[in-house]
View 1 (cartoon, rainbow, N blue to C red):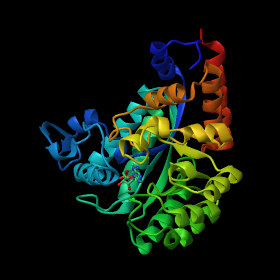
View 2: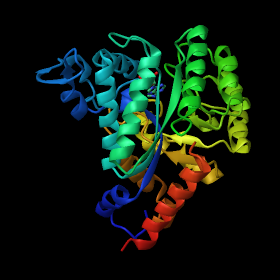
View 3: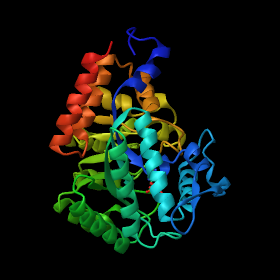
Length: 355
Ligand code: 6MZ
């Protein structure tokens, strides 16, 4: 940050800025505050106020650092809380509201549809999440999109099912269901096996984002970049000084594929050793396009404000550079041309009118 702003001002400034969140896993974004308030619904679907789910197991996020394996155990514990369609609907509204209170004006949520506990089918899972999005968009000035994830630990058949689901729901709700994501524990599954499903989704007009493996796996990272997704997540282990190779870095550089950068997630999950060792600096120096994201705001106890603040401090960004970063995130989003025009007008308007 330049002398334009003192350290204490940065947080206030980043909070007040209108922001776009492009990498947020629904269940990873359930904060402790939300977990503590999860209501139990009676059979009629109404909230039984006096009855609360015991979710002690799920509240494991206070830890300062988790390794990647612990992160995935935490997600599994959170999934234990999502026991009914009503709870899924409720947590989705709460997650969206938390982003909105952080001045997020555009949110891309991603989630792997699940048939778990009393959620009878992946279609019901989709229905509840989409309903919650529609409800929140009526209540708050926020645009919300949904990406259907394939968790890479799934079978090829389940990956196919998720692609079919994404295509079906994008036809029903083209303004909401706009893309697919490949994510999950990088030590499980193989990217190549999901390629036919992802190609089918892309051919039907869906946008794609892939988590480049968060553990060193040059072969798979190269295959993913060669696949030319619309965006990639994380991009740890790509730079030759940071666990990658010169070849990979050059492929990323020449591809111009925007990278979803998740600073707290990468540090807290120990995928990078410290913020000073984060590849964001190399990306800035090389001109690789990137966007600042939270990943799992709940599990990593962070906000998009906090991530922008970290980026501003790490890269010594000026206010003007923060504005450019925000405007670029509009370009990299999976929103429609109309969404992008509206968001650009909103962001420019805010920057012109701020004191
Ligand atoms: C890879 C991640 C992730 O889908 O149940 N997920 N996958 N790397 C990460 N970095 C820490 N963070 C979250 O949200 C939780 C799921 O998102 C993926 C994992 O598959 C996790 O189970 P949903 O809404």
